[in-house]
Image (tube, rainbow, N blue to C red; front, side):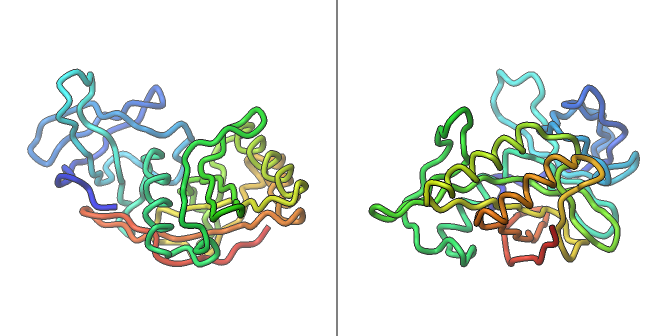
Amino acid sequence: MKFSSPLISGTIIKRYKRFLADVILDSGEQVVAHVPNTGSMATCWEEGWKVLLSKSTNPDRKLPYTLEMLSNGKTWIGVNTQNPMKLAVEALENKVIKELVDYPTIKKEVKIGDSRIDLLLSKEEKQCYVEIKNVTLLGDNKTALFPDAVSERGSKHLLELIKLKEKKIAAAMLYIVQRGDVESFAPANHIDPVYAKNLKLAHDAGVDILVYRCNLSPSEIKIVSPMPFVL
């Protein structure tokens, strides 16, 4: 996923009210940026970290700047949770996600039960439902963790995937890891034990657990390779 225009560099002062961040641009101007992330963003920012912002040309937007990435000095961390869907679709079209190469048709935001699942992949009568999560939390031993806050919605999605498997329909949980300083993935049991339990239930029910890492740069984010996981 290449950015349509060059990102703008700056330094974060603080994140507040969940969706706002004060940033000093390299030009010296201070701006308020939109933060498209409902999680805690723990381990993703500290005062003084470098950031990359996109800028909208839409004159009706109250906040033209959007927080895309932050750097801890070792890696860029992608925090815009609107991007994982784009990243996943691009990777599927380029056949990067090897477990899901047999589905040429992709449909977004499909209603299942009381939830919406991110993707429905299909080939003739064959189908696979895929839920996507953005992973940014850094744990011990270079482990990427999810979620970074209690996620009742995330558990609901897992239970819907289990129901699909019970109906003999293929289902997958795709975790997209947007930081480069990790080597494996695990559920954040200390944050949301219910989610961790439901992820194990989903795995035991036959839901495919797929974890893929991204390469991140100021010009592009792309999914590149699978990562091991421990449940």
